Amino acid sequence: MYAVFDGHGGKSISKHCSQNMHKFLAEEARNMPEVKAGGKMSAWAGDLFKRTFHKCDSTAAEAVGQSQAQGSGSTAVVALVGGGHVAVANCGDSRAVLSRGGRAVPLSFDHKPERPDEMQRVESLGGQVVFWNGYRVLGVLAMSRAIGDHCLRPFVIPDPEVRTVEVGADDDFLILASDGLWDALSNEDACNAAARALARWREESARCGQQRARGGQQRARKTGEQLAADVLVRLAIARGSADNVSAVVVDLKAHRPSTSASSCAH
Image (cartoon, rainbow, N blue to C red; front, top):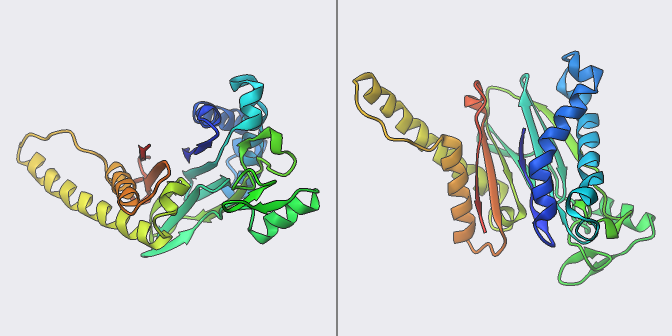
C-alpha cells in the first residue's frame, strides 16, 4: 500500500491515518472472501477501500479525541499495486497520476466543493458551498470529502472514489502527492520531472552495476523513487508552493520486487 495523507486543522487525523490505514486495509481484506479467493482487483477494490476509509474515519474520535475528530481532518489518496493492476482510492484533494507512454493519466479527481457533482451532493443534503477565499463547504472547508471533520457531516464525507486500471508495458510510474505539489505543478510537469529523475537514476544504476562487477566500492544511494520524489518536492517549492508538499513515487517497472519511496517538506 502506498499513500499520502495531508492533514488540515492539525496533524492528528493525518497521523491516525498514516499509523492505521494499512492495518485496517489488511483487516478488511481478511474479512472479504473475494479478496481471499484471489479474484481480480477490479472486482473487490471499491468495497475494500470504502470499508477501510470508513473504519479509519469511525475510529478517529477514539484515537485522537472527539474535539480533534470534529474540527480537523485529512485527505487520503491510497494505491494498491499488484497482480498486474493499480487501484487508487481518493478522498479529498490529494491526487494520483500515472505516467503512461509519456502521458500523464489522472487516476483520481480532486474533491473540491465547486466540482459540479460534489456541489450538487452537498446542496441536496441542505448544505451550502460558499465562496470565501475560495469555494468552501459551509464557508469552512475547501474540500468536500475528508477523513475526520465530523462537525461538517453529512456534507463532508469519508467515502473514497476508486479507480482500477491494468498495468501495461507503457506504464512507467505512479505519483501520489498532496495539493501543495499540484498547486504548483501540472500533471504533465510533474510526470516529466519524475521521468527525467528516474531516467537519470537508471543510467547511474547501470554504471554502478558495471562498477560492482569490477569489484569497485559502492556508497549508499537513494532509490529511483526517492530521487524522483525529492525532485518533485523541491520543484514545487521552487515554483512558489506555500503549502506543505508531500510526494510518493512508485516505479512500476521496478515493482517486482515491490519498492516505493516518499519525500516531504513542511
